[in-house]
Length: 266
Image (cartoon, rainbow, N blue to C red; front, side):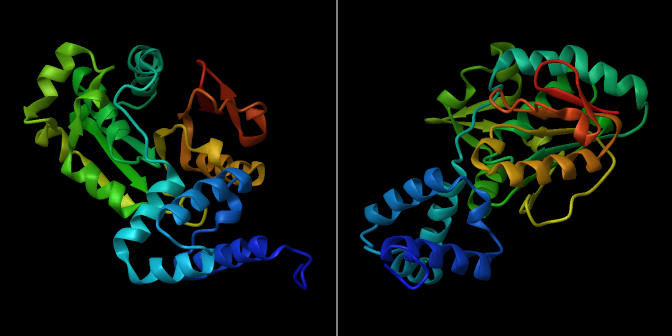
C-alpha cells in the first residue's frame, strides 16, 4: 500500500489523471472511473506500456499516440441519422416550433460532434426544410483528430445506413470505398475545439444537440453540464439528448420535457 492508502497500480492511475489535467486541462475524474480506467488500461497494454506513468511520458512525445488516447477516451462512434425517428421528430415538430418563434437567423450547436455525422445530419435536415440559408451551425469537440476527420467529410458506407436514400443521393458522392459529404453544406458549419467541462459556452442558441456523451460523465459533471446548456439556450430553445440520457428532473435546470429526448427552455 502507498502512503495514501492506495495500491501502487491505483496510485499510478491517480498520478496519470493529475498529469493529464495539468498538461491538457482534461479532468478524467469527471468521467466514470471504472469505465474510463478499463478503456485506457486496454489501450496502454496494447501499446506495450506496463504503467500509466510510462504511457503518459510516451503520449507527451508522440502526437498520434495522444490522439489515439483522446479517441479512446471519447469513443468517437457516430453515424448519420442515428436513431432516425428522433431526427424525424426534430424535422417535423421541433424545427417548426423554433422557426415559429424566431423568424430571423437560427443559431444551432452540435456539442461533442465527434467526426461530424451529427452536425452534417442537422445541415441536411435544414437544407431539406429550406432553412439552411438562415441558420448558423457551430460544431465542437475536444478531439482535434475527430474534428479534422469531420472537416474532411469522407465516410464509410456503413455510416450512411440510416440516411434516407433520396437524401444520401443529394448530399454524398461515392469515391472508391468512401463517400464524400457535400462541400456546399460542409461550408455552412463552423468546427472548433472545445472542452465542454471547462470552457465557457456561447449563448442564444435555438437548438443544442448533445447526444450519447453524458453517459460517460459522473452525475456531478452531468449536473454542471445541464446547467451550462440551459444557460446557453434562449427561452423556447431546445436541448436534444441521446436515447439513454433522459433528464429525470428537468425543472431544476429551467427546462421542460417536450418530445422524448427533447427538452425546452422555459
